[in-house]
Amino acid sequence: MPDVHIVWDGFPFWLELKVSKGNKVNVAPHQVAWNMAYWARGGLSFYLVKDPRDKHLYLFDASCGPALLSEGMSCDPVLRACGPASLFEGLGPLITDHYARKKGPLAPGD
Image 1 (cartoon, rainbow, N blue to C red):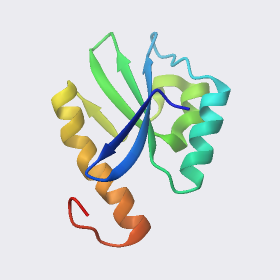
Image 2 (image 1 turned 120 degrees about the horizontal axis):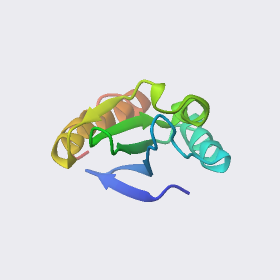
Image 3 (image 1 turned 90 degrees about the vertical axis):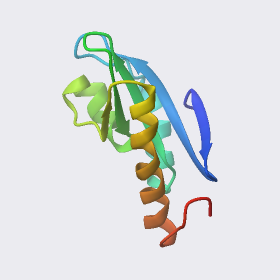
Image 4 (image 1 turned 90 degrees about the horizontal axis):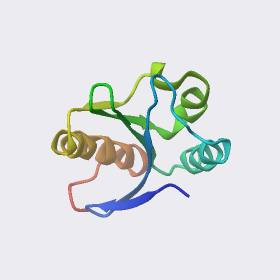
């Protein structure tokens, strides 16, 4: 299971927390398998990677797990944040868009 489970306005999602070492992200195969299985069944999970070189936070959706394992930081993140405030500002639309696609249009807090 990933490191963090969050419920945002009633919408659940998971975060796997990582710190990159150069271009490498140390993602274990069992972490990739869990996230891919959860994502394939409609769940929402992300890899949140901190890059100590530039101090940014990079958010990758669960489907990027195999690429993170093999290619590291060369994958395209769904969000690049300069700190926690911009991370949470960018997360909101990603979460609500995901659940809107799964269930149809939703109002915040539904």
